Image 1 (cartoon, rainbow, N blue to C red):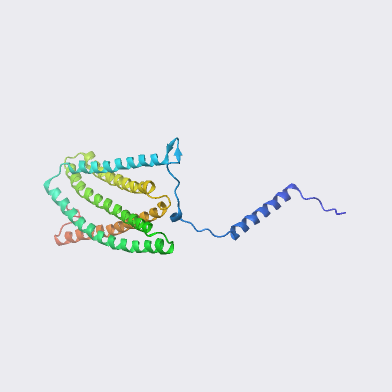
Image 2 (spheres, rainbow, N blue to C red; image 1 turned 90 degrees about the vertical axis):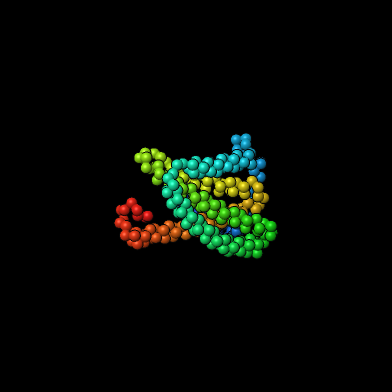
Length: 268
């Protein structure tokens, strides 16, 4: 007979834990790989999904209505700021600045057009040749990448336009010596740009959820995100370069006309 004591409950539980861990590691390393991504996303039928008794389709339609109100708010704020009083000389300067900015936007639009050709070729190659999607689906994905770039570009143009004339209105309001209108005008301008940006992007995303086939929505989101993100990045980077060039130009004019740094005539 053996004198070896029987294992206690602690040893048994540790042994079971070790066996379970070994089985989990084996399942992790021996399982076949599964490849999936956003392009493989298939949305559920939103008319059958409910939240507190309201279908998902109804909620998204209501959300789109809220986004439309946001767009109208941004446009109404634009019209309100445009009607504010401004001195003729200040208005002429702001319009001159806008013409310069418009030249930049047109040039940037040509660059974005070339960028979209490059993006579209990559999308066609990936979804059409590598994934083998139908030609109609690939066209829709490319179309949403174009819509994404146009969304970023239109908001950039709107922001450039409203900020150039809001600055002259704020400067004119500052002549009255009242602080609230002076900072309220640029605050309203920035608020209108932010509201318009969010509302337009959400309208486009909700349109994908509501009107695009459920098995194509994920790929359309990818196309839209690529176009919108690259468009915004290009406009942001080039816009920083543009403003730095304008800053350097104002410094050069200060030197040419022999104006001191703190002179009121200094354009910088």
